[in-house]
Amino acid sequence: MSRVFVDTSAFLALLNPHDVAHKRARAAFERLAAASEALTTTSYVLVETYALIGRRLGSEAVRAFRESFAPLLEPIWVDEALHEAGLDLLLSRKSRRLSLVDAVSFVAIRQRVVDRVFAYDAHFQRERFDLV
Image (cartoon, rainbow, N blue to C red):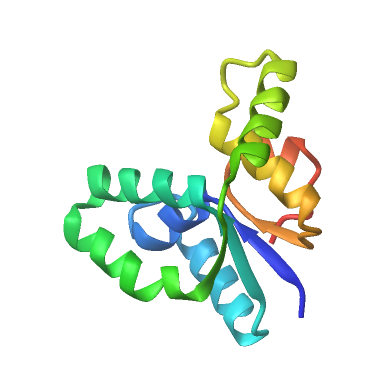
């Protein structure tokens, strides 16, 4: 069984039927579920996901995510060391478009030996991660 990191962009694509990547995300998620892949994400991605779901889809969608998706995940809880490593990476990139959440995700993916990434955010492709 491999470990797959899930980004906010994948969660949003799964939950929003109007998202341009919705059909691809559903098919990818079904493949991951059928293969019993271990899904992981960071606590920062979860915070970002809850905030965006609430703003875009409403509180019932937040509840559905918490009850349906969150239990399927092995969260990586961001501690001071991971936060600082992500902030160091963010500052070294000098990019206005890279977020701290993504930078922390990149560090976590590399530290935790994640095999693939489920994301529709171009930053993950530029990092040359193996995307689902």
